[in-house]
Amino acid sequence: MKRPLGVTVVAAFFIINGAYGLAWRYQDNPFTEEMFSLKGPLHWIRIIAWLALSIDFLWPLAGIGLWRLRKWGRRLAIFLCLWALFAIPYTFVWLHFNRAVFGYELWQRGPWRLLQEVLFSVAAFGLSIGYMFTGQVKRAFSV
Image (cartoon, rainbow, N blue to C red; front, side):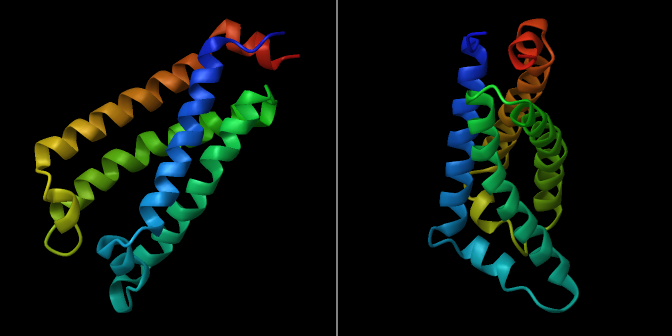
Protein backbone atom coordinates (compact mmCIF):
# COMPACT_ATOMS: atom_id res chain seq x y z
CA MET A 1 0.00 0.00 0.00
CA LYS A 2 1.14 3.54 -0.70
CA ARG A 3 2.14 5.65 2.29
CA PRO A 4 -0.68 8.02 3.30
CA LEU A 5 0.12 11.73 3.21
CA GLY A 6 -0.63 12.07 6.93
CA VAL A 7 1.96 9.41 7.77
CA THR A 8 4.51 11.34 5.70
CA VAL A 9 3.67 14.54 7.60
CA VAL A 10 3.89 12.82 11.00
CA ALA A 11 7.18 11.12 10.02
CA ALA A 12 8.66 14.48 9.00
CA PHE A 13 7.37 16.02 12.24
CA PHE A 14 9.10 13.30 14.25
CA ILE A 15 12.41 13.70 12.41
CA ILE A 16 12.34 17.49 12.82
CA ASN A 17 11.31 17.16 16.49
CA GLY A 18 14.24 14.84 17.18
CA ALA A 19 16.71 17.08 15.37
CA TYR A 20 15.44 20.13 17.25
CA GLY A 21 15.68 18.34 20.61
CA LEU A 22 19.22 17.19 19.96
CA ALA A 23 20.31 20.61 18.68
CA TRP A 24 18.78 22.32 21.72
CA ARG A 25 20.63 20.00 24.09
CA TYR A 26 23.99 20.33 22.33
CA GLN A 27 24.03 24.08 21.82
CA ASP A 28 25.76 26.36 24.30
CA ASN A 29 22.94 26.30 26.79
CA PRO A 30 23.35 27.15 30.51
CA PHE A 31 20.08 25.40 31.35
CA THR A 32 21.27 22.11 29.83
CA GLU A 33 24.76 22.43 31.28
CA GLU A 34 23.31 22.94 34.74
CA MET A 35 20.99 19.95 34.44
CA PHE A 36 23.76 17.59 33.33
CA SER A 37 26.14 18.70 36.10
CA LEU A 38 23.83 18.43 39.14
CA LYS A 39 25.13 16.72 42.25
CA GLY A 40 23.73 16.06 45.69
CA PRO A 41 20.00 15.77 46.39
CA LEU A 42 19.06 16.93 42.89
CA HIS A 43 21.17 14.32 41.07
CA TRP A 44 17.99 12.51 39.97
CA ILE A 45 17.30 15.43 37.62
CA ARG A 46 20.55 14.56 35.82
CA ILE A 47 19.18 11.04 35.30
CA ILE A 48 15.99 12.48 33.81
CA ALA A 49 18.09 14.75 31.56
CA TRP A 50 19.96 11.69 30.22
CA LEU A 51 16.65 9.89 29.72
CA ALA A 52 15.34 12.88 27.76
CA LEU A 53 18.50 12.89 25.65
CA SER A 54 18.06 9.21 24.84
CA ILE A 55 14.42 9.83 23.94
CA ASP A 56 15.59 12.56 21.54
CA PHE A 57 17.45 9.89 19.59
CA LEU A 58 14.25 7.83 19.30
CA TRP A 59 12.18 10.56 17.56
CA PRO A 60 14.05 10.40 14.23
CA LEU A 61 14.14 6.61 14.49
CA ALA A 62 10.34 6.54 14.81
CA GLY A 63 10.08 8.97 11.89
CA ILE A 64 12.16 6.65 9.71
CA GLY A 65 10.03 3.69 10.78
CA LEU A 66 6.87 5.60 9.89
CA TRP A 67 8.35 6.70 6.57
CA ARG A 68 9.12 3.09 5.67
CA LEU A 69 5.74 1.85 6.98
CA ARG A 70 7.29 -0.46 9.57
CA LYS A 71 5.09 -1.76 12.37
CA TRP A 72 7.78 -0.99 14.94
CA GLY A 73 7.82 2.61 13.69
CA ARG A 74 4.11 3.01 14.38
CA ARG A 75 4.45 1.41 17.83
CA LEU A 76 7.44 3.58 18.69
CA ALA A 77 5.60 6.69 17.45
CA ILE A 78 2.59 5.91 19.66
CA PHE A 79 4.86 5.30 22.66
CA LEU A 80 6.76 8.55 22.11
CA CYS A 81 3.55 10.56 21.71
CA LEU A 82 2.16 9.10 24.93
CA TRP A 83 5.43 9.86 26.68
CA ALA A 84 5.35 13.45 25.37
CA LEU A 85 1.74 13.93 26.47
CA PHE A 86 2.85 13.12 30.01
CA ALA A 87 6.31 14.73 30.00
CA ILE A 88 5.53 18.12 28.44
CA PRO A 89 2.82 19.27 30.88
CA TYR A 90 4.76 17.77 33.80
CA THR A 91 7.87 19.71 32.78
CA PHE A 92 5.86 22.92 32.45
CA VAL A 93 4.41 22.56 35.95
CA TRP A 94 7.77 21.53 37.38
CA LEU A 95 9.53 24.52 35.82
CA HIS A 96 6.81 26.81 37.13
CA PHE A 97 7.45 25.76 40.71
CA ASN A 98 11.24 25.52 40.32
CA ARG A 99 11.93 28.46 38.04
CA ALA A 100 14.20 30.05 40.62
CA VAL A 101 16.53 27.06 40.19
CA PHE A 102 16.19 26.06 36.53
CA GLY A 103 13.56 27.89 34.57
CA TYR A 104 15.33 31.20 34.13
CA GLU A 105 16.07 30.69 30.44
CA LEU A 106 12.65 29.33 29.53
CA TRP A 107 10.72 31.88 31.59
CA GLN A 108 12.47 34.85 29.97
CA ARG A 109 10.02 34.48 27.10
CA GLY A 110 7.19 34.78 29.59
CA PRO A 111 4.97 32.12 31.14
CA TRP A 112 2.13 32.64 28.64
CA ARG A 113 4.45 32.06 25.70
CA LEU A 114 5.69 28.85 27.29
CA LEU A 115 2.10 27.80 28.03
CA GLN A 116 1.22 28.35 24.35
CA GLU A 117 4.12 26.13 23.32
CA VAL A 118 3.00 23.44 25.76
CA LEU A 119 -0.60 23.53 24.51
CA PHE A 120 0.56 23.39 20.87
CA SER A 121 2.82 20.42 21.64
CA VAL A 122 0.11 18.55 23.51
CA ALA A 123 -2.33 19.15 20.65
CA ALA A 124 0.20 18.02 18.03
CA PHE A 125 1.10 14.82 19.87
CA GLY A 126 -2.53 14.10 20.76
CA LEU A 127 -3.58 14.46 17.14
CA SER A 128 -0.65 12.27 16.06
CA ILE A 129 -1.80 9.49 18.40
CA GLY A 130 -5.38 9.80 17.18
CA TYR A 131 -4.22 9.65 13.58
CA MET A 132 -2.12 6.53 14.24
CA PHE A 133 -5.30 4.68 15.20
CA THR A 134 -7.35 5.56 12.12
CA GLY A 135 -8.33 2.77 9.76
CA GLN A 136 -6.30 4.14 6.86
CA VAL A 137 -3.08 4.14 8.90
CA LYS A 138 -3.74 0.70 10.39
CA ARG A 139 -4.22 -0.70 6.87
CA ALA A 140 -1.02 0.99 5.66
CA PHE A 141 0.99 -0.68 8.43
CA SER A 142 -0.65 -4.10 8.12
CA VAL A 143 1.13 -4.91 4.85
